[in-house]
Image 1: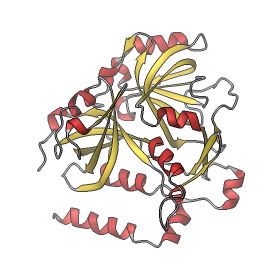
Image 2: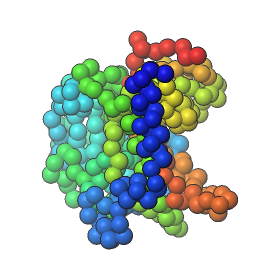
Image 3: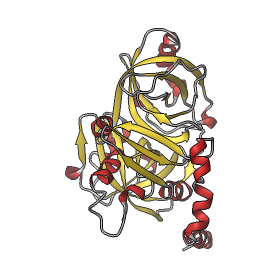
Length: 330
């Protein structure tokens, strides 16, 4: 192992060995902060149970989307996306949708701009629950929403990346962002692995209390833990269980579920990926609703532990593949 790798390994081990009390004091708000719902405190998300069950094993969502505000096309160095805020009855939460590599999707950008403040447009893409821009108030599914005045309001729900606007197919926009510097694998996944969570199930809805989570786009090597015939194929894509490695092949996380939107370059690349083989990819984290559902259903079945208080369950939307950086693995 190189000196730099050894140094990182020592630092990472040290971080993981910090006292639980010290770590949680930094990452988890006090009861007073939770009750006030202030920014920087707990993030509280209430989802309908039938929504969780419907989408837990789906990669995408398709909605009639009312565009409240269309944002600018970001420079590649800022991620190259176009953000748009809006509402959809199918979701019932504030939504920010994002066109990936928006500069190359001129017709879609123009369609969104033309729809702003007017009738709803058909929109599809990877659904995403994540707490990067949650704000200070609880996010309750089904609560009445007023039109948003900017393209990035407080939200936990995204359609990111968008795969379809009306009849326009945007799946080829799922590719590397030239000029953008993604997050580093060790830093990002250590963050994902240590976001706290508490799940409170109810008869009709489930509440997830967690904290702000960032590290939006990460570059890493995914190593398939399954043969192609064992991948979970669904109507709108597929799920593949993978190990996460950094760009120098060091193991970062042993097992994470990856989601692939049907017909995108990443999905085409992974569908024939043999067990043990690797792809270099861009990933976007989201809450894993399949694990939320599993924890609720097994809350009384795990000996000496409470699944409802385990760290935040997450999975990765694979948004791009670097074909020229792909290797065969060991």
